[in-house]
Length: 402
Ligand SMILES: Nc1ncnc2c1ncn2[C@@H]1O[C@H](COP(=O)(O)OP(=O)(O)OP(=O)(O)O)[C@@H](O)[C@H]1O
Image 1 (cartoon, helix red, strand yellow):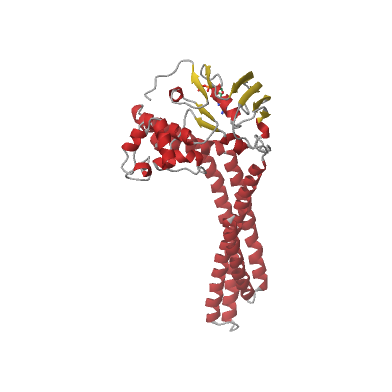
Image 2 (image 1 turned 135 degrees about the horizontal axis):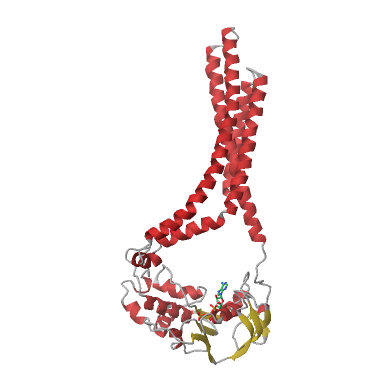
């Protein structure tokens, strides 16, 4: 939007200069001046056509762009560095990148070359008109109707005309290009959210959770991940969901937190369909340690309090969360206490934690959040859960260092 605004200003300013230059130049030859304007227009139209073509081309090649971005990411992100070295796959990844980049670049080059050729060809026409105007002016100087001084005035104005024309064209193309992008964004915004936030009830304490004949498949997939699931959990119960890998345990949690809605059946909390609750208030009632909980390149304090940023908490709450997750010793090792950075990505003095320590901090974050129900996605954490808990584990727990 800002780009459109700036381009709009540049365009108006260039057009004013251009019109003023044209008004003066028309005194030499009105016919050639009109011709100059007329031959400048096809270039503008061509540029606009190609801007649209290039934009549409980009839209149809989003997959390749994403693949290349993904490959660039794994070739440079720290998370992949160890395996990249151990498996010696640097060249393999580069080749994979090149295999996409080659055809992608060749096609884009073809389109861009055609545009450059036509634009160059069309830009010759205004130059020819300018030559014509200068020729007429030279004849008039020889005839004594104009002076040498006029020649330098008009040639300067013609140069000014060309540069203003270029500036106006560039601004118009930019506005058009941005307009296409804004349109795509508006289309995206208009897509209705798959999970409608129409509920108005507030959820505080949870006394019961019921799944009634719930079935679900992920959008755009065939497989029914959950089929007619029914069970209930009451307050003060600790429950383990046990199942093979891929059985759908995490999916149940995603439905409970309304990351997705069930295809059929319903989920009730305190006897009320979860769709009747305001989503923020529903999610607020749960604290969840996901299987792949991330840690943040923030301070230790922020890594814990981030789970409940509106909680009016003091330092003791943070220390208690650390204690409950057996992470007090981690704090003891930190030079700046709770204000130590848990990453060296931006802070030279930051601390890189081990995998197990990271898990403990993620667990402390789960404890810090004031919620009615705790859910753990990792077997290791369930031993630490002492409050009302819904947790899940694998049929065969993996050996974990923590
Ligand atoms: N975003 C998704 N899109 C499509 N299918 C998915 C998605 N997430 C999970 N699935 C599929 O849903 C099924 C259930 O996955 P889910 O993660 O719930 O299993 P799980 O019981 O938690 O497994 P695990 O014990 O291995 O963590 C799997 O077949 C998985 O491939």
